[in-house]
Image (cartoon, rainbow, N blue to C red; front, side, top):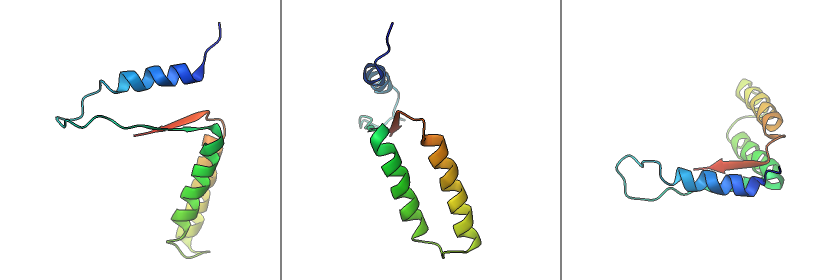
Length: 83
């Protein structure tokens, strides 16, 4: 028995399309980010977030710790699904 991740993700997205949209008529839109791009995305988010704080400040230190934690969390992700 072998699980094909792409098939599982496709089934998840098909099921998610049936979720209510709070009375709106727009369909759901999903973005699937695969393993190779997950690290790139996390790095890009960190770069963008750090543009708005002064290096060495308490806020900068807090953001660095947060992004280190996020990078570690995402290290084992095969995919991310954004809505």
